[in-house]
Length: 105
Image 1 (tube, rainbow, N blue to C red):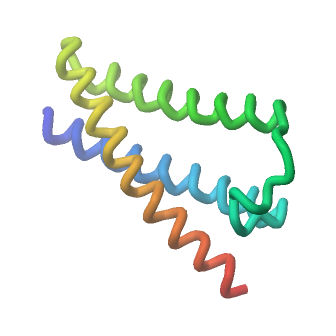
Image 2 (cartoon, rainbow, N blue to C red):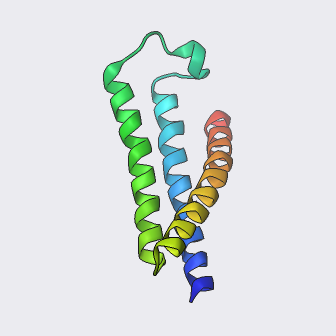
């Protein structure tokens, strides 16, 4: 059961990483952002609130996954940490892959 839950947690985290990476790559392309530090002209409170909300939503989804997959608090925390690690690694990989695909066109 634990092994199966780990597998499904990993599949969910990888799919979520792809989705979030695609959103980030597409938004950067739409707004013409090539270098995040050089391309942003000034602080935008609305964009900041949206980004904080997006990050919080990511944590909530991973926390909910951990809560569903685990039975006790310790295993729920473990599933959350596992899913977060898988998501984080694949988010970076997917962002690089998605960024390369967009540049070729």
